[in-house]
Length: 287
Ligand SMILES: C[S@@+](CC[C@H](N)C(=O)[O-])C[C@H]1O[C@@H](n2cnc3c(N)ncnc32)[C@H](O)[C@@H]1O
Image: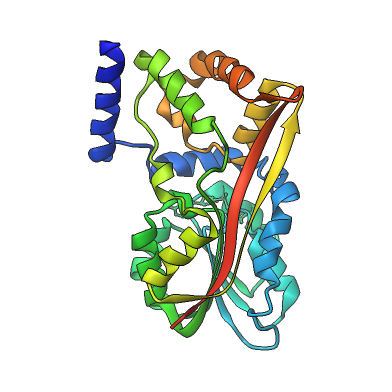
């Protein structure tokens, strides 16, 4: 008992000192995921389409668009097909994810490998539209929304889709339990929960604070079912849904059996292992 209390105190201290899974860790993790990220897109890309094809994104106008944390370029590629008039800047910190985007070699796209915050702080460009898909959890939303505001033109559009609180039900507690059992293996915690909004209402609240007015917001949830707990864990790893979790531990292979055992216990439902992805998306206008 005492050792558990001591352990949680230590984790709390690391969170306060920001000794947590960091930008560099995520860069490495997404480099690794780049070859399998298409599994995510195949299932979840359809939800991103809701913001790409929103009526608020004009088609016949020359637009300067930023695809922020663009990954392998799902949004960028769809936009290129949508209009010849768009000029797109696509930014991501993972070289390997960006390589997949560069495959298409289109002069309408400028791809930039950079930490997102560094890019936003230093660019002199102003944009008509910012697209931001599935990466809010990696940023401090206050810092980010303030910087988005700075680089958007007056009346500019922010199109965003993000995980929300309640996504990956029980996965965080599973990892916390494993960390508590394998204390010697733990290097640092993750602070991702702090960066997820409470559904679409939470997203609107965050955006309103930085003078982004909601034009359209929705929320949804997708479920995936697996026969074996190992398959569920593999889904989390190959899609990037659990990006960063490997960096919690000294030796991931050492703790993997404990993670699987906990998934087996806590995620078994109706003869299968189910995982949920809860999300919200919206189109916002800078006032
Ligand atoms: C889940 S992927 C989303 C990719 C793309 N937006 C999409 O909708 O498919 C998250 C992306 O965020 C990027 N990312 C995470 N932290 C970042 C940072 N600090 N700066 C720039 N990119 C970052 C990752 O490298 C990864 O490509």
